[in-house]
Length: 330
Image (cartoon, rainbow, N blue to C red; front, side, top):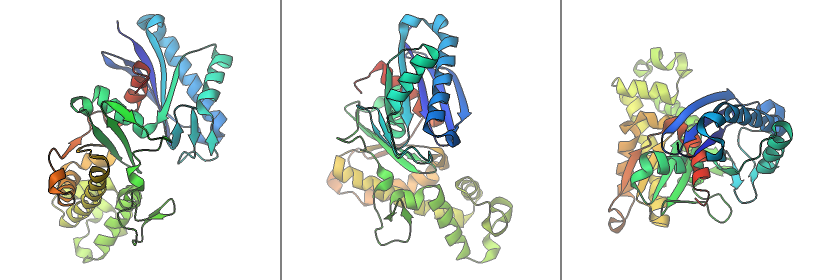
């Protein structure tokens, strides 16, 4: 039996927890609604209870002496050295919170459980999960980009996480690609996330459809007056031959490719692994993204350019959080 750890992915809507074996991968997994209405203390209590319950179920079977600890990926700015979480989106009332210290205290006082705890940004954890267990195993250097409600990123250099001096490296969603544009996120105009986060894609889709004759609208897919339009319905429509939906995805890919080209110029990273729910659109977004990436990159920087689909899906975060316990210097 090899080493094992608990991987936890904290989100605004759900807390995901898994038992990860270093060699065998995921052995168990659960998802629970985040008790965000209870504030930081309530969520920490929830995480502690889940962690203790999972540890108690598996410790004897897998070996207490082989338990490497817990890893936790959280949204927002994370200081992995001090264990601080700052201004996590979709978790109101947190601001600056000593997450690692509070969680360790509660595990000890309420459950009598003491273990190493590794804390990192959720996108960093997902990137490390892909590096150790997923599509990134074949690459020394890459950037993971997550496309979903928001747009996040994590950077792997030389098989190690690159966090930056303040722990905020890789936030590709905040890169500006249209500073004169109307879209805005977190008070910044024309960011990648404002344009191709979920809200941005829906807004773009409505704008494109409403600029066309209503006879082109597919109300069975997008709902009356486009009330049900979403990345998923746009994907379905495009695969069904809807040229307007395909045009929307072309525009989404263009924005993504432009953002990635900036990463190439700045970081000399040539491989991009794309995950998150919106990435399920596949080549609808990957193909135009690659075309724009190549067109926006100097010929001397084009060798090795690649856009690769992530392989761990929504489990990348828990895999990566656990992997931090196996390689805590990542």
